[in-house]
Image (cartoon, rainbow, N blue to C red):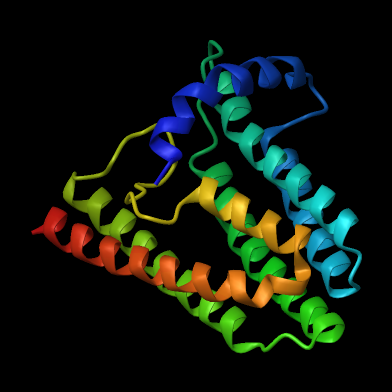
Length: 209
């Protein structure tokens, strides 16, 4: 919901940070790998009920995820660059899916052990993530074949929705800050992500019609 407005505002900051990181031993794929490792660490910390380290690892993981794209685009503009054939975009979305799923499970384990939280709200979130991921990946693939892709600088064609990246960062941060009410947050979030999934199905169907 907020991504379209936030991206232009954050782009100059991320581009400046990417220029600082533009050294030979740092690559976009390594930043994506760091994103993955930090996300898994956040999930592990949450499962162990180490909520503050889990939050720190989560925010750093999202920062790494925000920097790999700008660095990749900066490198692609260099003379003689032929790009990576989509490898970086594939690696990025793969890492994101692992991180999102793992962090939900980590919070569910920690909240269940520490606060006797029910698992059902977290299962709802995972189910909603599964639908959204399937829909946007299917749309991106078919839109590419039909010449109807959405070009916003990212590797895939993303359909806008009620729940997007900014909201995900916020919600995952909230249940690490307030683990005692994490399952209530997950219940509301799961419902919002389901609404977003329905939105994307409708918009994608109409766009490809």
